[in-house]
Image 1 (cartoon, rainbow, N blue to C red):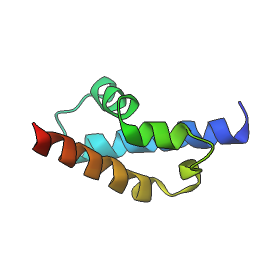
Image 2 (cartoon, one colour; image 1 turned 135 degrees about the vertical axis):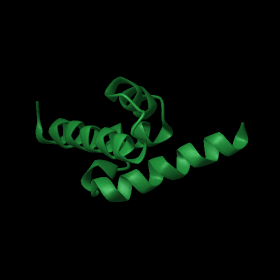
Image 3 (spheres, rainbow, N blue to C red; image 1 turned 90 degrees about the horizontal axis):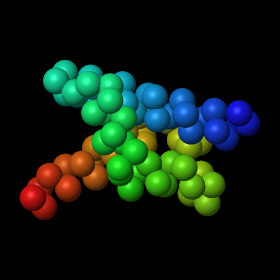
Image 4 (cartoon, rainbow, N blue to C red; image 1 turned 180 degrees about the vertical axis):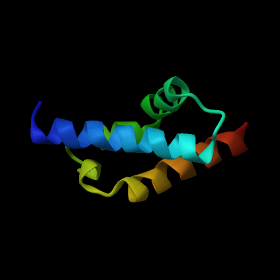
Amino acid sequence: MNEKEEMKAYLVKELALMLIENNKDLSIEEALTTIFNSETYEKVMSDATKLYYQSPGYVFSFLNNELKTRSEER
C-alpha cells in the first residue's frame, strides 16, 4: 500500500468512527456503507481533489453536510 492509499484508508476509518460517535445506534458496517455510498468518499478517493490530505474533522464536515442535505430531500 502506498502513502496515498494509506492516507485514504486512515481517513475512511476516522470518518466511520466519527459517524458512530454521532449516532450510537449505527454499526461499523452501516457507517462504512454510508461512507462508501457518498459523494464525499468519491472525492476522498480522487487524486485530483487531494481531499485525503485534509484532516478527518474537515472532511467529516463535508460528509455530515451531504448526509443532512440527503435526508432533507427525502
